[in-house]
Image 1: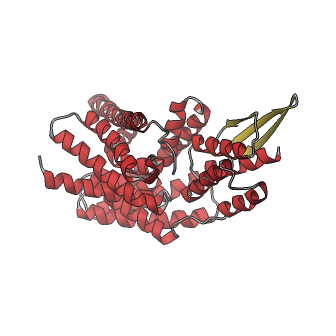
Image 2: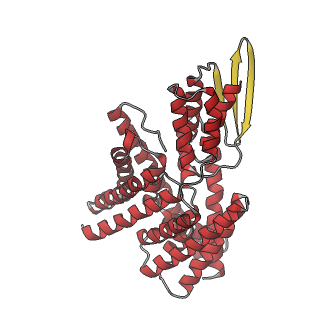
Image 3: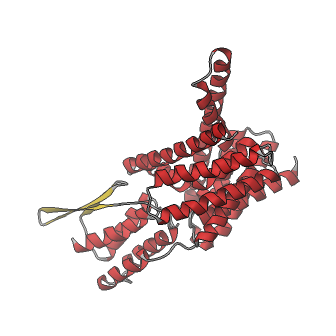
Length: 159
Length: 247
């Protein structure tokens, strides 16, 4: 496990999440929680992947971890949507989405073997983008369910 | 129906400024609860909200257009807090209208320059997460910063969201593509995506998914996701254009 590389990647993710928080006009009290949640989410995902867990399961667990950290660090024991949104975006499959778009542009003009290769690449990238997004959604839902179970109150409040 | 209209005013602040539908409805109900208004139901859409009240065998309905939806989560937070204060009986009917006007007048918490810096650094940090090099960091920083600057100017001119997104997306992606063409970085996909990432409709998407999951707000959830899909398609077109025209 390359701990320094994971820590640096997580730091970028935390900074990215806090910048997104500002872009989403989150109140200033939510910027530091966004940084912490972004850091923890990426750290959890990378550590789990380095232990051999698949990318999708790691992403789902990391998204759940983001919820738990958000509830722990935000006052009122709530999970503000803006903190969650900012913090899970670093886990998204933006690269796969981009490649899928590029493949989509290519397939309309290709023929023969090149068309077959581009089609396979398009399917693979769409599949990766879909499963990663689904993993994030499931992880968030699982995290919120766990918090509801523990807190026995509505956690999806506040901004 | 006057109090129902005031409750709708507070709830609409939530909807118009990027809050979730669930929060808008909770705020609406809190205001009604505070003034002991009963028998009121509401229908939520992204283009209008309708509230109906049944009293003495007669039904009355108020319909309000939602209008343009922006992002100002400070207003959302204040509107939700106002709803809670009304529910606790801390705000009388005479004070409600001035409070609504005060919240409507609240400026975004961050000025144009800070938003520009946030967009620039979000793009730059994203390029590093996606495996970009330091050259790509610089390209994404400049491309997104300039794009966000023009975006804020175009928003100030009250132009519709779609053309603003397309113009700024093309501008940022072309700037990034020029940097790549000059050989400042070798991380092509990461930099091109990072340059337009500041316009990704993250809040709209997550609100849409949660509306969809709740079943109660299925239509408004679908509307939100369709809106986000349009924005994402425009960004994809911008990237594809820059890729074809510059690289």
